[in-house]
Length: 286
Image (cartoon, rainbow, N blue to C red):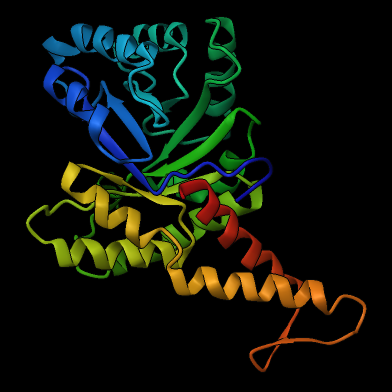
């Protein structure tokens, strides 16, 4: 969970910033966060207009408690600098940058955000979607305090690996685990990649539960219909909350006794820390 107040990022929905109807609909979708996309979801000739729409949406205050981020085009593309300048001026919660491959790039992006006047509340989200990024992800995750979140780009990663999309994601499980390790070591958030087949709700739910089991904070989504099951999968169940409360109470009541048990199991401080995290998540999404 990292330091500070927990912010839910269970469901993080990509929205094409060129589509005004999509931006309007996003105001009513129960996702925790939005990524207003200037990259893959926007044709080249629509990118300038999409940039204006995304920035206006980020400044509007019309999205309630949802975390609002803007995905700019990648470093080295013809649109990157204008995207970044506009996003920094708009001051969203986060700026999502595709294909961040090195800690040097993180530092470059942070310097640029500072130079362009991004307010302190605007954090950097780095997309990890290449073999180079996976192999350097531990250093990327700790490159700068302004980096708040890693976003796994599984589609690009599978492509770069010359692997295949298969149920269970065996070809990328090692990469996912390495990325989660890096995020936890750095104390920052990490989001699982998208699930492509919107006609396979059972497969989507299974992948959500797999991502939660791996330790991801949430999942990036491509369709509003994925939000509700994703929120459910990444939320503590009522049984988990009840057990967490019992563990915390048993630990408190047994303070100083040397051995603390709950429902016949020995409780250590690590169990209490896990329980406290469950309760913090539950409170934040309640």
